[in-house]
Picture (cartoon, rainbow, N blue to C red):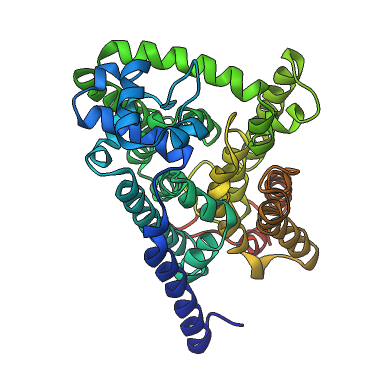
Length: 424
């Protein structure tokens, strides 16, 4: 189907709106009892009720949980001995505080509805980045049909908001508003592991002004927690973070549910050497992406960014460089996948086949992981993202060899054919 024609666009619009309607009309089926959401709701509840300074006090946490959940629900995953409930930093608790005034059921309903809105906004940003080559209907349908997103909203997770932060930051970066881009990316102060995944990007792209915005928003969020949660809550969170990291590395269930690069090796063996190798793999992805950026320094990377292989290389590397994440956070892989296929017409047949294989591995791998192994099987999706990143790096380097400097228009991707034409 050609979605550039009026009939094709109409069919896609109906399908996208049907997907939106599905999530909108079934959001009430979530109960707020999932372990992932229960932990976040508890943190929001403590801040909303003026108990922010006791955010990581296990006695206070348990008392609040007992008032809103049955014991069987609490002990099935919300609560873990030695850790308690919340595992995120105080910044997330303050941001989510309004949800604390709602019951768990209705709070999760709000999260589902806002997640769908976040997906639609992200799809509109993708349409702008690709100059309409990927319409908002395609972006919306792709994200809403992606298994990790479906599971994320079912668990009450916030991966759609993480996707929106990355997409918004990238759109601002592509339009040359570096400080504002950094301010948006700095919002990952609420999810520090993803903060690690974005902190290297300004360095690789030679955009140091982004760090000004990052520091401003991240420090601002941290300071905003102090009157509400105090210093003690941060000290408590550091202790919880250490315990959570230990569980993450040693508990087999979390190893099977994880999708980060170090987790791939942890499935084979555990120990200090394996963890070192995992971090080395993360560093290798960042280093190779930086090398590709250096090779392409005359064009896209040094000036403005939008879509195509170059953007895909950075954004896929962003996903792969997050040191700790579960299957639902693969929702962020939607962005590099869509930006990759936006230049489909400019690719050769061999390149198209490789790209199609990588994207199909991500989407179909996630569906198979859920249907066959309840997300506890082989990390097919992560391998797909690795393939997507490898394809993007290869395409970027290959394009550099046949083109000279081409200044892209703001917010519009430079096609490889333009490079070739410029070189000729």
